[in-house]
Length: 82
Length: 518
Image 1 (cartoon, rainbow over the protein chains, first blue to last red):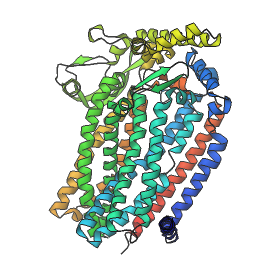
Image 2 (image 1 turned 180 degrees about the vertical axis):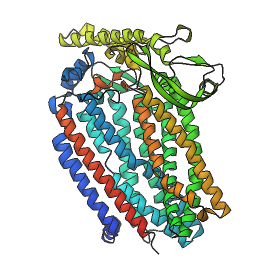
Image 3 (image 1 turned 90 degrees about the vertical axis):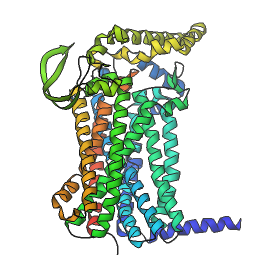
Image 4 (image 1 turned 45 degrees about the vertical axis):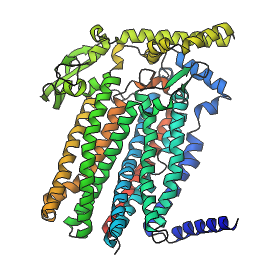
């Protein structure tokens, strides 16, 4: 058990020191990464990019029936939008 | 889309995907290529023990880090779009897409994330050799991640190794190795990574040239030019070779795309390769589509036949061969493919009806039809043609295909020249005195990006109207969502990505101006 704890400690120190001693550009890009991830995951995914089939159909059977309907329908999907 | 932007749902969805993919691809190739350049530089440092190489490696590693950090996760948005905008497609492709993307995710996470941390935080903390191994693993991991994405894309160009299950309305992978070693995937991977190596080499060469223009960091700049020159020249030769292989494969598996790339309407023996050409509109038509002819062209006689068929007598198929068919060559006409596609759709419709009334005998019988290889090869492989209204609709945008292909080729030869001149001047010892060349090298930094994006433009526009070659049209793939929401997210993406790009360029410029640490 002891060696594992020591390894985890060393790993933690490695990342901790790495982030703490990061240069100016490193800090800047981390701020950008966090803002970007927030926008992508907390805004875009939740509000704009819900999975269409999972949102509108309850199970795989319903989903496959919907897609089968789309595939066998003779008109194109975008035609039905107009 | 380029022909007729009518603001429909499918066009906006395509525009949104194109915008996301184009921006995403601004970050990726530099990561793929620069990671190998770093590994080479660090190897020299470890082998020679010279501190100057450590300093050089760390400087380029900073620029790599900025690009990596800004670009990371931009590809996730493409996966969101699959589920939201392209749900029919996502469902239809089934595990063919899921498996490579899952492997990519795991590889990206474990190889890149773990060893990128060692690369940046590990100087002075881990031993030299372990650090070097980490740098190589980041390079290999990043390029292997790209492999799986490219395998998925190659399947869209040339679907293999699967069988359609009417019960789930999905394609199921039956041969993983056929999907992985799909000839299109192999060509695409080698061409893409070599072009990314080239792009990164031009990046290093251009920035080093700037230091020489400013008479700063001359030793570092010259050593960087040495690495970028050799790596860039080898990569650009590999790009030419893999590009040729790629085009040969396209001529076999996507002959309509190939004919569009060459603006070849009439098939012929002894076909010439167009070295330079300008297209113009004519009154001639194929169905309702205008034929474009050359207002001016320079061609190398017979070379296209040689490159595609091995000798100048071999026949290169033209667009008309595919619309009207060519019995002698065994090319099925588009109207015949449309009939076959409609037959496959009728069988699928019968299955749907049988399932609705729970006719188990009929369900079993039709399932067996789908398992029949003859039905798969003769009919279901043309399933997408059932959605084609007019035969000429299978012709992609010839203008975009032709110019994107030829401009990419011209740029490819220009890169070979630039790297050759760089090495010649470097070995002659006069590179610092030739300001004209240093300026050319600096101003050439964006050109490989242009060439790389043109390659993708050709790949995707040249495949139209298909999202999956011959099996599904783009308009069948789109989800029935509101056009307004797609427009909103299109604008959001445009703002987000432009912001990221501006951040990247400004942070990078600042670091370049600061230069390496002494």
